[in-house]
Length: 366
Image 1 (cartoon, rainbow, N blue to C red):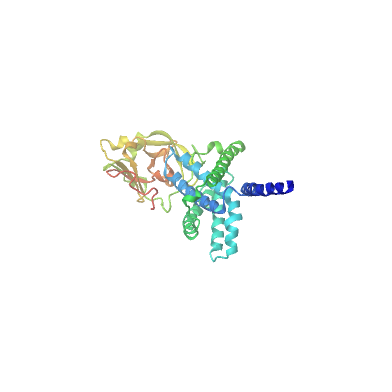
Image 2 (cartoon, one colour):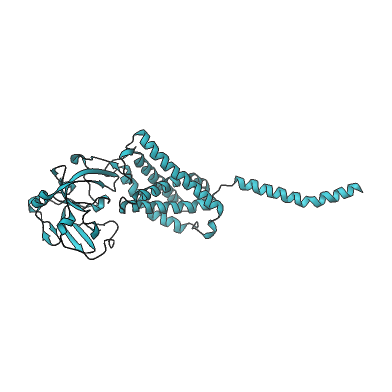
């Protein structure tokens, strides 16, 4: 009788023990799972690449006020992509290669392109490979970034890993947060390492640009935006008009005063000079409007807020010597706080415009 009752008790307890074992197994299984599933990794990488492209473009177009944040976001998103590349390789890349899709090698090429772009940005940021002009790390990084953008769009459209509300579970948010925190930590570590190693970290701008030829006009790089070419018109034949009135260059030189300002090129270099310059406000006189248009002899032009008339200057020299032709001679714009494409060279016309200054392309196409 006792054995029968004991058998009944054991039988009654069996479901509870089974439930406990099942729960323990699920917890064990959950502890072995990555915080980000393969699908989560794909979605996070797509978001990170989009953020990297947008912040990189923003760092070109905005001035020094917010550019540090744009550059920081750009660097952190790029390094987080690098951190997640291993998970991507073990996950959807392996699965995709097994499926044998016709476009799998395009996807592999896309992945290698992204890694090369990140690596080049890292080489420039650390100062291990920096310079001026075509073939440098920054120039190639930018070129590859332009190529990445349309391929990323194709990849997102052609793959079923588009973001869904269901992806925003706790594990995904936590895993993505940890990855981004690790990427941000790498950025900070890299910055500290560059400064300790003396790789020009102290001379770098918030944009990441390295100083070249500061206070040495002869050593300042000579570059132009896209295919903008220096005109051959002699200084004696140069015609400059401000607000519809001709301005004599000799008189402009006599009025010029030293102004220390830094041109920060989108090519990854910067140069600080003592410019011999005259504020636009003193040349515009009583003219007024919503914006100021500065136009080059090449047709290149930029709109600026009218409120910046005393910040913007026309320069005729630097360090007491005339401008060189490649640097904008005989007269160029000095736009403190703005990136290189805003520093219009070979200025011929300064007009007051009634259009808002932001009613233009972020970067000129000419």
